[in-house]
Amino acid sequence: MSLTEQREGIEAGRLDMFVDGAFAFILTLLLIGGDKIPDSTDKLLYMLGGVPAFAVCFFQIAFFWHGHVRWRKRCHSADSTGRWLSLLLVFFAMIFVYPLHMVYSGVFNSLSGGALPSDFHLTGGPADIRALFACFGFAYACMAGTLTLLFLHAAKSAAKRGFSNLDARREMRIWSVPATIGLASALTALGLPLSAPAWVWSIPGFMYSLLFLIGPVVNRFNRRYARA
Image (cartoon, rainbow, N blue to C red; front, side):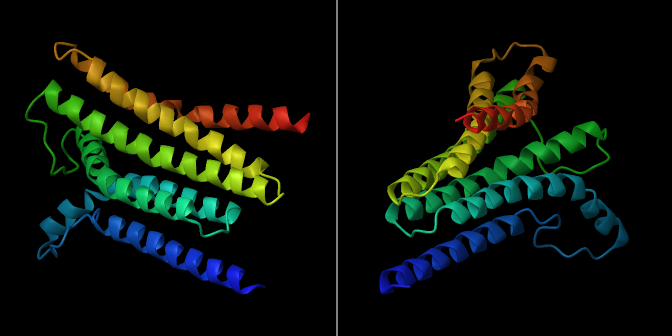
């Protein structure tokens, strides 16, 4: 291994440790009890009511973190493009964590009829819902879009080195799906009139069910290049 390759390996490792640490810190912002330790059974049970929302938020953050892990498996170089895009992913993740928690704590509070706690309450009606879904959607789209760019960079890097970039291109298409859905959800929320019926405001949220399209996108990609 050359000195340059050793240096690149060290730099890549330091970047990955920073990203991993940043995502770990982001997860601490979702702690169900915050910085308060319960001093009674009632408070403990109240805090445990936040576990369902925390679990979904944990999965969402881990989903994006694992995307970065998968990118590193396909891009071992430590160039400036990968470094800045990785830092951009962390930046968006630290913004995403707040609307993420607000959305899911509100969802579980509503579905449980108020049995599960939520520190977030909609006081401005449709205007609040619009703002929340827009913030969530744009942050979601930015994170997925950044991962799309990371895999695009990995594909170009592999091609320059004479290696197959098929896996990176597949991942790029995978991440373009949540990026598109997040953007579409945010724009839908912004486009809805404030006078719309209450059920209409659930549409931006239900749009994330379209994430199942990741499967067909991957299958189409595999069929296309299996024939090549």
